[in-house]
Length: 329
Image: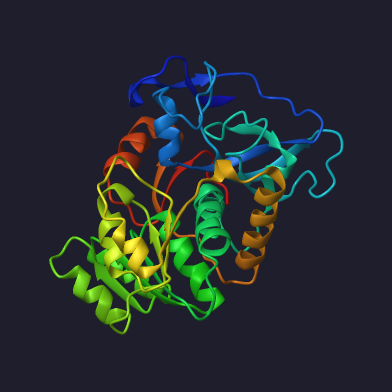
């Protein structure tokens, strides 16, 4: 089968298109014929061999997320069958042979039903972004209909999903994007306001959009840049959920004292197998109820995986970056 393989750590150039044998599922494992694979920043980090959360054993095929059709089952798999349309969230899987390939074997618990209403490209947008958004809004942020939520980077794959989950709960939602296209997407998903986070005066815009009180929950994608400002604009007793940071920042801890703020870190690596599966069950239910519509951005062929890794770390995308493995939806 055709796949992307990494034989040495390095830049995007180490992503090689190769022919390798089809993987065989073992007990409690599933093989999926992959139609589309989601591309995530942590896959680009892992490719360098310096990503603390996951250093793969060489050689390996990248890819945690994908969607396709089940074509083989191992023993003791009961919740899905051959021929089912599914999406894959394989970041925390015990075994995941990589979704940047025509076929992948992954733990059965990492494979979830995909409604016929969604394309495989949309299904490939659900894995890591869906889990991260659910963890931020529901598990860590504990958002209720009484909350006002501000989401940094709301036009990215995680942000767009977080907006929809928060709106499904009934919260007021304000989100930011640096582009007009991104802000249009944010508004189209039902956000109450869309802010330009690279324009002077964004602080005042956020306060105005939250009735002058500030948000009760902030979902922070780049804490090394925004955390100190987050503490300034957050409402008293507010929660700041950090799911992204690319460096260090100096903050004034007095804000946490005078406002009674909670700063909450999060990562999927802190969820055990049962919590991860439960989160995906809840996410699947929200999708099936029409509360979440995965939004796809750029779609590239598998052979352009190198370009995809360049895009994922440099381009401000709107929606999920996806590799198309097969053309049939």
